[in-house]
Length: 238
Image (cartoon, rainbow, N blue to C red; front, side, top):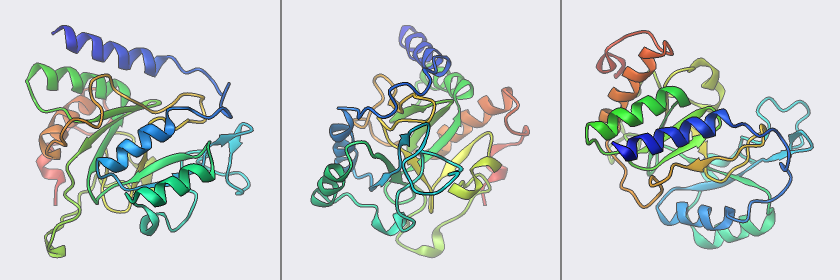
């Protein structure tokens, strides 16, 4: 159980240790390596805005989600794993954040950090498969296999937990990022001054687990913290 304690302790310290906006305009030298690793793992990526001057690098006045959205409104069609395209993007703006489009090669289950920490402890204790996972401010991101890109389009099934950029605030508990959504990739910088970070030992070298067993544990953890009504996860799926 030592690994469980170290990992959940790291999540707690990171989630509680917001550092403010200091250094928000300084590029992260790890960015290029980490984003290249994401595309090599099959994650389609696209450039995103970044925090700048206590606001957003985009030109929108009063941007409602500063530094955490794609640069282009056509991000869904532009997201790519092509190495040449990626290098052009990396060279264009050394400070740009990057997002990965979900529902193509992977999904992401996104929960409040304290519920996610509890879920990690339970997953490790049960010997369950825990794939790549990242801490993004006060949220934990669990990367899983996707249900959103079947060979037969009629086989795709939506879920009321599905989250899109415009519905993010409607999901204070579990957010399921699949078709039409995205998440920030490490080491993207947040307006708080924190960075998105892979959990120790849970980077892109791990296989993507089936989302449903992970969802069961996350649902129980969120219910314990009253982020969601206490419902059986299976009844949420359609």
